[in-house]
Length: 193
Image 1 (tube, rainbow, N blue to C red):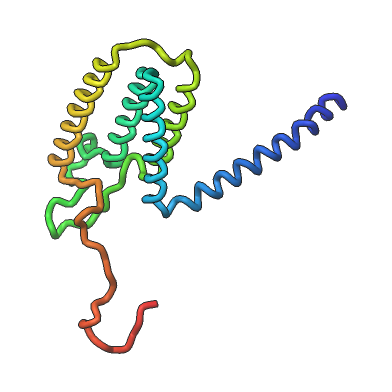
Image 2: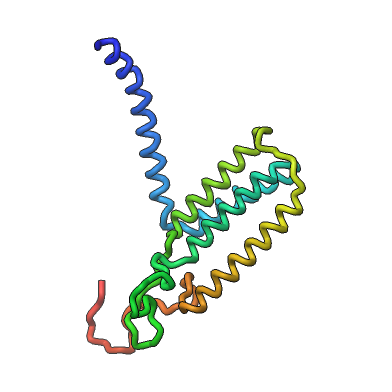
């Protein structure tokens, strides 16, 4: 019994180190949450480095194809509503169709932060895979590229048709934002702090 306790104490500093490291990682991940533009710029830089690596090595097309399929799946989740109106059995529409209807915000199936995190993690894993010749399967890459483009076009056409049919826009572009009370409404001297 004492021998097993000694082994547990030897792994305790290792466990404590990994615990502290994961807390530090989560701390910086939490701090990056409101900075979406900087997060996406960093991810695009990583994706460009990955693309340059694949072009330079002239291989790993299967890895790139798998990455493309996974990223397309993430994009569909990002553009889709949390509750699909097509599958909802109720008679009332989930999204407002008239100006007098109650406002119901668009809630994504895959939130932006999880989309970014999964996107970045996938690109990093694919980048690491390019350093192992096991994953460099010889294929004729133009066929894979054509197949992925056709898959992308068909999937996006279906998604856009769904957006048009159920009248939702998954982006905040062009939507009104609350800017507070207008100064011309009155000068009663009250301030909203």
